[in-house]
Length: 255
Image (tube, rainbow, N blue to C red; front, side):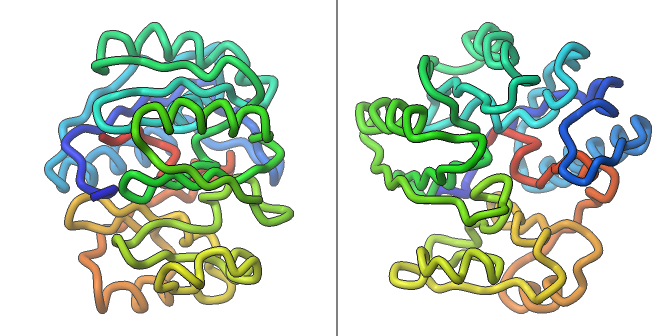
């Protein structure tokens, strides 16, 4: 199943994270980010996952978000091409690290594509085109995934949404959590059960199912009440790191 994992890879936040990309123009406090990142790792460990921690990359303020320059499938890693100019080069550093961790490493050489736009459901991948992911990058990743035996669907990320997974997440094999903006596309309704996050709690749509636990960002009480009826919820504080557009899924690679 797409949410059963044995390993998770994370990267220590760098002090330069204050210069990371931010759609709201805010700068996070480094020490508070470290505390949140440590809490995040602790919650992953509670789900019986082995944590691999990479060193901080001061030259790349957004490098704590390890899911953007790469995705995993089975025991393979696929290096992507970040769509933000400030992240160019980060994927090359990650490629050199990945060859010592994964069975085999594949590389997307053209276009732009970020992991935040890729939702995996078992052996199927949904790629959302966005400002950070274009058709050229999506189609090159599609070729690699098809070669590895996966299925691929390319669609559009809703207008005004940073990444496809900013507005949706996998709760189980049959259920998607989504925002109203995602629901208006009608993309998931014909194939999955859907749960819409309560109005005003759109950030909670980027929750993270890991083994038997569902990791949900703190501070969204209506979403917690809604989901706790069916899932074993673990809460993680992302108040500070969310100032630079973070979500729970982007802070780790899982396989």
